[in-house]
Amino acid sequence: MRKRLIVILALVLVAGLTAAAYAEVQNVKVSGDITVLGASRNLTLAGPKNTNDKSFIATIARVKVDADLTDQVMATIRVLNERYWGNESENGNTLVGETSETNTNIVLDLANVTLKEFLYSPLTLIVGRQELHFGNDMIIGDPDTNNQTTIRSPFGATIGYGQRDADLTARKAFDAIRATLNYDPLVVDAIYAKVTTRNSQNIANDDTNIFGINANYKVDAKTTVEAYWFEKNVGKKAPSTSNPKKSDRVDTVGARGVVAANENLIYQLEMAYQFGKKVDSTKSYAEVANRKAWALEAAATYNFTKAKYTPSTTLLYAYFSGDHENNTYNTNNGTYKGWDPMFENQKFGDIANTQFDQTNAHILGGIGTLKPADDIILKAEYYAFWWAKAYPEGSSTATRRGDTVYFTQRRFVGQELDLTATYNYTEDVQFSLMGGWFVPGPSIDKEKTSTNQRTKLASEVIGCMKVTF
Image (cartoon, rainbow, N blue to C red; front, side, top):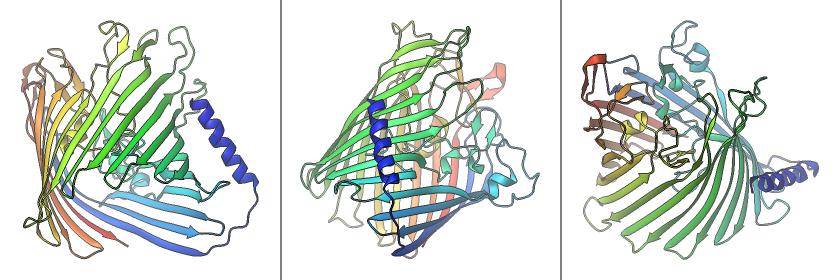
């Protein structure tokens, strides 16, 4: 399937490039945004406070240029800078990845060409660096998932095995080809993306590629359904007697439905299944297991449109099947049941998202919003987390921020409360203030005296000003 898809997309691209055309600029639009963040984060779950936790001010600045050309052609370029304040000296920081270059660099965030009515009136082709979002971003939305980023971003600077503020990054773009067939009310997207290219002399092909098809159908004014297949393929490792050639492949098929039952009630359900091959290349001989993983997200939102302050409430549940990386696959009869987060761009709890990947979890949540004034929005979020598969007693793992956390055999991970106040100063300027608290549950060992590890409350406060132009 994926070979046919890439061949088709390549042929379409070649046909477009070989059809010589002169593009005259008809209109140019310049836009962008500047976000200033002030944060105090104490997110360490175990042991003494480390340099991952600190107060800081940072800026994210983006400038986008859209050029409308002749013959239904549009070109888009966006540049991006992410930087911590006060860090521009050549030797200003010893964190891996966080140098003066990463802090002051202006990087190419978007660079793509859109060809509308390409060869065939319903077909639109987008080629180049672009954002890809489908559904609720449970599968495709961020090239390194919502809680990670490249170390070329200062937010991706690492300590130990963790990334400090990777969840704050604005980098969401893929190097991709996207072909969209719009047969209103049916829209079909086919994509190919190159996530990483390594080109090591000792590795023949260990690139990470995405292939996929997404079909969205608007049944009527109240109901939308979609179905999809996406594949993540991590190329073969170097051939040797100790680590034979193997490819890690994740195929995800799923469906999603959204129904507006009436003007107040909206509910949605998404289910997905993963299959393919799981390769554990850390073994002396690469072990291969069949993937069999499941995920589900369900939510219901009720908007009190006629009530004072227009409150709304959302109840949600999410499930991502679990397994452990150190599993030899024998306990599951040669299968690996852990959900691969793929390229998700979701956040169930701001602090939990920074620490744990979106896998091996039951999540129960509630969201409430209130508008005490036209330009003020108050939001409260509560989430409770359970492991789908409990960790063995005394086992440990490193979180995404580098903390070593020890486990009991209990399954309740913890609970989080996030409170946010947003003030729309003008149509272009917005202020917000968010406070979050994560309380570890009994599955996380409260005190590990042999290693002087002590589990504690994690908290953060983030203030933000965003100007859009």
